[in-house]
Amino acid sequence: MEPPQAPKPIRHPDTLAQQIAGADRVVFSHPHRGSRAIFTGADARAIVRSISSAQQIDQCDCMVASKFEFYQGTNLLQSVDGDMGWYISAGKEYVDKSGTLRDFESIASTNQQAQIAWLNDLAVRSAADPGLPAIQEWCVGLLSRWNAGQVETNRRGQILEHEIPESVVHWCRSFGPFEPHISVYPKGAEAACVAVTLGEWGLLIGNTNYSGNFQAVYLTNATPGVFAYRSKWSK
Image (spheres, rainbow, N blue to C red):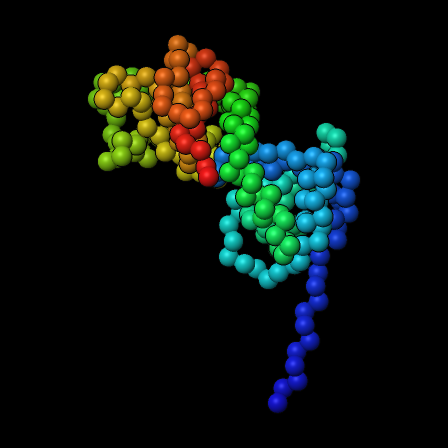
């Protein structure tokens, strides 16, 4: 009979815990759901405790979907990627078994104000992006070709991949790890904008006179002819 194996020692992210100990603000973002929330005070301290006391685990089959960024004033101390109580730090994986981290993530990723904050931030980032004018120029050209019947789509009305330049795909991925779905709107009349859909949110891009006529639960203007939008709220 083989002797019983000694239990594995419990390991915590000691280096990370030291790095984020002074954090007074925690920024949570979930690109897949399109949400962004800022935690301060007791909430920020609770998140720091949960991250610091998490236990190292063997590699799991988890997908990185969200990020926590830890700030002291305006100084970024450290950040971790993960999802629902699990995260990666320095190539090692940890899980918060208290459930506190998962609770904060669940609340933030489904909170309507957090989803609005994500879109407002998206509009600001888009407006400041030096690549936006070239993307808008391509979209205006696509609309012209679409209205002339020169663009191929799939059954869902989405533009086929070979119609989309790699530069456009690369630009879209700067907002998250997404494969963009690109379509035109409205479909039954002369198209006025290109909808770049990234999950339940995205960008509407037309010429500089486009006014954002689109069915959305939230719409915010980035630059003339460019709007960040959300088709429905995540729950």
